[in-house]
Image 1 (cartoon, protein in one colour):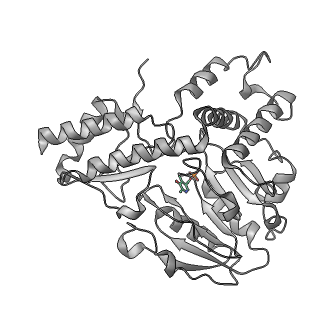
Image 2 (tube, protein in one colour; image 1 turned 60 degrees about the vertical axis):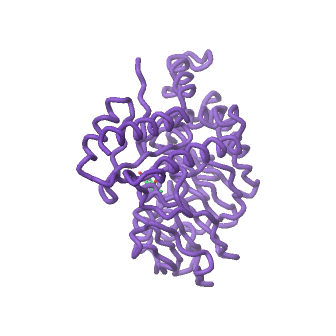
Image 3 (cartoon, rainbow, N blue to C red; image 1 turned 90 degrees about the vertical axis):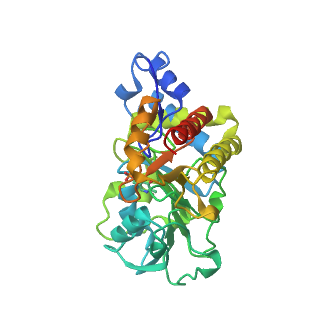
Length: 360
Ligand SMILES: *Cc1c(COP(=O)(O)O)cnc(C)c1O
């Protein structure tokens, strides 16, 4: 067996101990005589797996008691619609901050349900920064303010949490959740598709303040009704049981590592050394302003894009996979989520330096 360092933006690497445990428990989960995949979601065994996962997530993020945690399907993209359906609560308008490709998708979807007020956009800069905190002015009648703390494609991350006063703040944390400690109480709702930093695809986590749920737009499907899902323990219908189980193993792995403060230290180190390597030479460059560079997704370009193909082929041969940048940005993108070991980043930096020696 030989595993590579996989820099995919998502689905992305999972911690190796998690995959090993899943392998060991594949055929017989702890004496139950069955795989987790084969269990009734209403049976005692799976209920214990589900409850443990939620308890561990609550502990990791210190989620206050007045927040409900939902384990849903449909990806972050379904939440683009579920959020207005649940959070408009009679209002007609919502504020959105536009910092990149995922913000734009959230905005386009929300426009089906309400008037979207784009309070700030960094599109003119080519999505290489975030708006100045002092420039943000929110509509007092907005039902909520939506933003994308980490833009997975542009590699742009907010260094601050917008202060929206009494207006609930909604955050698409698909590519940054669990990368560091977080003050959940600053948010009305946090959501994340699992396949970047939580577990396998198929699971979407929603963390929502309980006073915001219970009033949906007419026509909202039952499975998209947060209150109905919360009351049913996310089991209004069959949940993504195996992804839920694996997410639970990832939460355990994070706890054994020392929790999110420890994870944050490692992530900071990984990101800092990779950006330092990019900045150390004109051979490579980062398109993102220094103040808002993502810890998780690191796009970079070669001064001579004619060398892109050779760079990627050599990387592949060196066991560094999926470094091709998103088509809208070009160049390379190294996604270095929690499960990317520090040795993977070290190996990438060594390869970059060697490649420059050969071609620079
Ligand atoms: C990947 C991603 C999405 C889309 O997630 P799906 O689960 O494919 O719907 C949305 N927002 C952000 C920030 C992402 O990184």
